[in-house]
Length: 147
Image (tube, rainbow, N blue to C red; front, side, top):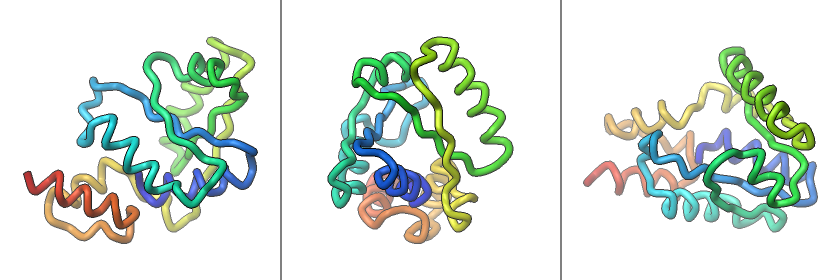
């Protein structure tokens, strides 16, 4: 979880009665952290937001949203390149389930350049990532990459 992700979640928590940070269980992406580790890191990041909970899902996001009784998916947009991909996803999700809306939110401009892929690369090369992620995520990255 980057500070950009956290910014979106925090702002969404002020707009909605309840927010679920839904973590996809997709091993094909080869995540650095296990699903259990990712859930724990996100839970630590949102513990000060009482209306936010963390969960994981398998399969289609729109099916998960429907199963939870949700109405919307919030997606963060950093740049035009994000929009093209996210727009396609939103249209496909609408085709799969027209009851689930997609809402795009932009992070604060200070976070628009952040991506978890770049942050992992900086950490892997020994760079300082404390300005980009919560402290516990920085610690977890250092520990994971030291192995």
